[in-house]
Length: 109
Image 1 (cartoon, one colour):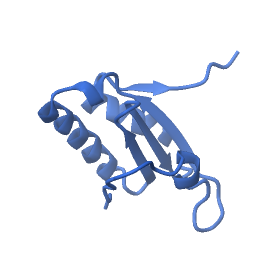
Image 2 (cartoon, helix red, strand yellow):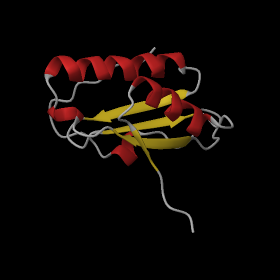
Image 3 (cartoon, rainbow, N blue to C red):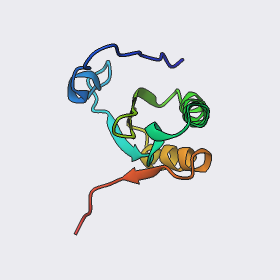
Image 4 (tube, rainbow, N blue to C red):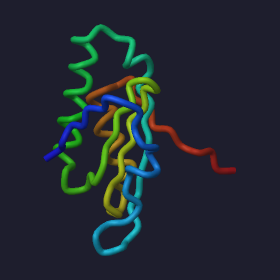
């Protein structure tokens, strides 16, 4: 079950909060999605989008280890277990429910 976190002050940097390894010491994977203007939308619309995101993350709770939604930057960060294909499958499922969400990836040359 996902547990919401309410920040009342500055949060620790993401690199300190997001786990890098599972309980057995295996490396975890992560991805980032941009949801343009999410934090500037009307409250009801923003809440609906956040519910959609939560529904997808709950569906994939077997894979999701950590999730952070930064409304100031409109960035969703998700850390997942090392399951083949999960870093494409889960963002695709999120995009189905939140079409404006975009997977952020580095460009390989």
